Image (cartoon, rainbow, N blue to C red; front, side, top):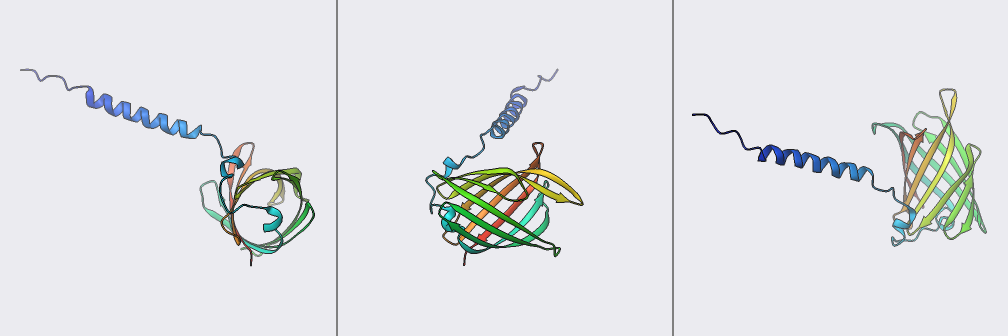
Amino acid sequence: MNAAPASPAPARRRLLGTLAAGTALALAGCASAPVPADYAAERPLLDLRQYFNGRLTAHGVFTDRAGKVVRRFVVDMDCRWTGEEGVLDERFTYSDGKTERRVWRLQHRGGGRYTGTADDVVGTAEGQTAGNAFYWAYTLRLPVDGTVYEVQFKDWMWLVDERVMINKAEMSKFGIRLGEVTLAFTRP
């Protein structure tokens, strides 16, 4: 007597389950990137002119594409505003002993919009606050082993409370993700 062929139902269910999972992952990959308005209802409200005023300290790491920490650093900041114009004087000290300085010149444009320039920034940085968040995009001239590369930054900051703000910046070149910078700013 010949055995009846196995029912195709379990195999079909596994295939459908795999296809459904693949479709869900594909759709998740197509999800739109966050925008500042996504955070409009979040509190406390972030006013860059208030938060970046006076002395601050930030502790950060740079991670490569695989997520490995490749550099740690501390930033001492002296920030001041005169009306709608601000200066953020950043002094970096890296774990390997190297130091760097960047001086941002910011302009509040109204409606939570900001622009900024610095000597190692190509053109003008553009940013927008909403709720507790700030999104900032710019191109930075980054020296690496004697060569200067122009890399793009997509920079997000979220105010946690009146003292602490978290910053996460994605670095890319030609649309290829190079790594991330993560910082925690602390006001005294």
